[in-house]
Structures are given as C-alpha cells and as structure tokens.
Image (cartoon, rainbow over the protein chains, first blue to last red):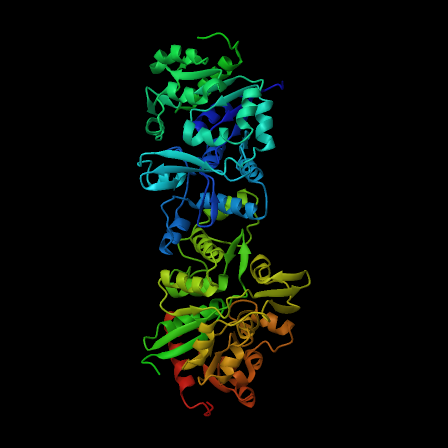
Amino acid sequence: MSARTKVTLLAGGVGGARMAEGFAGLDDVALTIIGNVGDDDVFHGLWVSPDIDTMTYTLSGLINRTQGWGLSDEGDRALSTLRTLGADTWMFLGDRDFGVHIYRTERLRRGDRRSDIAADIATQLGVTSRILLPTDDRVQTRVHTDAGWLSFQEYFVRDRSRPDVRGLRYDGITEARATAEAIAALATADLIVIAPSNPLLSIAPILGVDGIQATIRSAAAPVVGISPLIGGKALKGPADRVLTSLGHRPDALGVASIYGDMLDAFFVDHTDAGLGSELARLGIRPVVSDILIAEPAAKARLAREILRAGLSTEAQPL
Amino acid sequence: MSARTKVTLLAGGVGGARMAEGFAGLDDVALTIIGNVGDDDVFHGLWVSPDIDTMTYTLSGLINRTQGWGLSDEGDRALSTLRTLGADTWMFLGDRDFGVHIYRTERLRRGDRRSDIAADIATQLGVTSRILLPTDDRVQTRVHTDAGWLSFQEYFVRDRSRPDVRGLRYDGITEARATAEAIAALATADLIVIAPSNPLLSIAPILGVDGIQATIRSAAAPVVGISPLIGGKALKGPADRVLTSLGHRPDALGVASIYGDMLDAFFVDHTDAGLGSELARLGIRPVVSDILIAEPAAKARLAREILRAGLSTEAQPL
C-alpha cells in the first residue's frame, strides 16, 4: 500500500463528478476514476464525450458550476455558425468545448487510444486525478422510448429525459474489452467506490464491459456505493423515473439491488435510514449519512466518511 | 445574352475579394467567381479553405474589414483551448470560422463535392454571387524556400511571407479536373476578368487546372485583367518580392506577361501609364485608371470601368 490510499471510483454524470471532487480534495487519497463512455456521440463529425468531459471539467475547476456541465466563460459562436449553415444544433457545444472535441477527434483520427486521449486532455487541463476509460472500444447507450431507440444524448439533451424509458441497451458492450489501466486500477485499489450516479445510465455501461465486474468481485478492496436517490427522488436527472419504468424500486434499495453482492457497504441518506435492515438482508452494510453533496465541504466530508466506512472492519453493520 | 451581364471573375486573396465586391455591387451584373483552392489546408483535422472563405466572408459582409480576412465579432475560445491542449495554433482560426470548417469537413466526410459545399456555405451566409471552385480535386500550392518546401499557409501565415520564394509548385494540379460549373461559367460569360490578385500564388492554381485556360482562350468573352501592383509595389501581400525572386518583372508589365495573349485588356494605375506601349506590344490593350480600390465606391467605379472597357470594341487602344 502506498502512502496515499488508492481509491478507484466508478462514476458518471454530475453526481459522479461531484463525488470525484470530494475524493480529489483529500490529500491522502490517490484518486482514479473509471468514467462512462456510453454517452459518447458524434456531432458535426466530432467525437463528443460528455460524461468524461463533465468529469474532466469538474476536476480541472473549469466547469460551469451553475449548469454542472460545460465550461465557464463559454461562447456559442461556432455553434451559431453551424446553425446558420443549416446544421442540427440541439446539442449545446460551446466554443471552448469545441476545442476539446476537435482535439479529441483529430487524435482519434491519428489512431491514438481513446483512453490516452482522455488522459492527456485531463492532464493538459490540470486534472491531477487519473481519469480512465473502462474500454477503448465504442460502447453506446441506447434508450428505447415510445418514439423508438434513441442515443443517450437524443434522449437526455434533445428530448430532456421526458420520454418514458421502455428499455436500455449498450451497443458494442459485448465486444468491448476493458482497458488494462481500468483493470489494474480495480485490482490494486485500496477502496472501490461506486458514485451516486444513475446505475442504469451511468454505471451499467462501465460494469458491463467484460472484465470490469469480475475484477471488482475478485479485488481485495472493499466496494462502497452511494445512493443517487434520496427519499426515492433523484437529486438530478431522471434516475427515479428510469428505475420505475424498468421495473426497479425507485429508491436507494432499488439501486443497491442492482449492484447486489458486489457491494460491501452502501451509503443512504438519513431520510432512507429505514431501508437499512433491508440492505443488511441483501448482505450490504448500510451506512446512514448526509449524502447531499452540493457544497465543496460536504463533498470532502462524505468522501472522508466513505473512506472510513470502507476501510473499517467490513462485517460490522451500523 | 441575359438581362444582366455575366461576369466571370478569376480571383484569390484580399485583392480578388475586393474586386468581387465591386462587381457584386452592380445590379446589372450576374457575378460568378472562380476562386483559388491552392491555399486550402488541414488544421486540427479540419479542412480550411482560407481563400474561398475570404471571398465568402467579404461578399456576405461578415468579413472583419480591419483585417481583410476572418469574420467580424470573432472569438478565440476554441483555438485557445487547442493551444492549452498542446496543439500547434499558429494558424488563427476564430470560433465562428471554426463553425465553417467543422461544417465543411463533415460535408466532405459524407462525400459531398467540395464545390457544392463551398456554394452552400456562401448561400447560407447570404452571398448572392456564385462562388465556384476551379476543381473538386485537391490542389495545394507549395512554396520552395531556403528552409525547404512549405505549404502556402506555412509560408504566408506562419512565416509571414518572409522567406524568399525559390520556386512554386501546385501539387495535384496535373491530375485535377475542372468542375463543369467553372468551365460553363467561362464558356458562357459575357466578360472574363482576372482580378488584381497575386498571379503566381492566387491565379496560377486556377489557370493551371486542366481545361480552365483552354476554355478562357476559346471563350467568346473578352478577357480583362487588373494589375495587382502599382508602381512595382504590391498593395497587399508579397507579390512584388515573389515576382522578382522567380524572375519576373515586379510590375504591371511582369504580371501581364504571365497572362500573355490570354488578355485582351489590362488595367494599370496612372502611375504605370508609361507601361502602356509595352503592353500594347504584347497585344494587350492597356487601360489606365485608378486601380486602388480600398473604398466601396472605388470598387464599384472600377468594376464599371472594367465592364465598359471589356465590352467596348477591343481593338481600340487607349
């Protein structure tokens, strides 16, 4: 074990980025994030990786904090030109953001690995935590709605998560091979954390990559999750509705059930303390805390609690 | 002959764009421009077409008039992000400009013709004159300097036209096929005009495309050129130095000699009235005028004079 505790965080979405910030703020933690590439899409011929970018922009401090995504001091000149030229511009892409997408696309065209590109972007933007991709292959989350199958961005951005989700699939995931870095980060972690992200839209496209789940299960590190729902409501995004429509309980217990015995402990909000005994019945140690982490101090405090809970004797339920 | 006089203008660079503006401002003229694609280059994986863009931006009124190139109300967020990411950013590309390059590259990737893309961009940006490409094939002007062969943009933008030009070549020009539109625009023109552009850097990559020069020579329309030099000095750009170093006279006569008997008439500045008899000896009718056309009124006035001179009896020297 190194001087710093090695935390490997599976994370997607704004909740995932906030959790990452919490750990990134702890001096005694070496944070590695395995992000979600299922949201990746191509706009105007450019490879856009919204979930990885949200993580990168958050950890670099360049994020637009009001929105929770995109860059601060952003412009829309490139997109407005594309609109004038008749392009479909429902996906907001800022001028600074375009710089990232242009860079990424050019590196990809040159044959560089997607994960090397993501790592280099993060480094150049000043991120000191490691941002890994679960796979260098293409995985695309597809959302089945009454209007047919949509890409994640069509569902989430264009249609504002309004359509009922009838089904999900992760195109390419069966053939996708995990990156050696992601496998190593899980195998050598001191603690594995599943962020308070949407389990089906953000975490499933990571866990579904061949080798990821098996490595988590065989890893020496304890696995701690945090509920993305408080009192059955998603703090951000459509998690509660998606869980319901796909036959899961729209609460912390529903989320924990999806991860099942992969989890050693699961953080739920005080509001959900009543779910503790049911979590324990699933073999998952419940940890009740304040899991609302909008503020920087709250993020660091929760990260510290997760660290403590994860690294303490695991058999002891709260 | 249609109600409007069909003028087909061969043009490149800022001088070419200014001349185009002059004709575009005349209600009784239907203007078709054949532009220069020899300056095209790929930056950050995007296809950039600076000479065609300068023409498009000028005729749409979106040009940055202070610079003479690029768009007004431009930003540099995308480029500064690329710089942060470690990309080579000596070529200034503004945010609005990036929108155009992204659009063009995506259309090209889809297999659209370069000339259709250029025409659509011009139309969408409000240009009513037709902007044609001499060819849909790739032609790249290469500049031989003491530091080796450079692309045009490396020579012109990166190295600010400082290196002495030892030679020029136009890669791909032998294989390039003229577009049907360019051939038709020359064959059916009432007047063919060669703009006050750099003859070797802007006009030669047009004239060199198979079929262009032959069509001009066999066309019914008179051919009128305008000197890009006044008193042996280029108004903008390195034309005088390039002419000298490649063994041409750095003056209006040197330029007219390059075009030779393709020209019926050639406009020179009052300063160069003394060259008239030498032009006449070449079989080219000299027209002495004020060819400095920075102001809108001057552009329209010169365009009108060219129209009159070109369409008057050709044999009559001034």
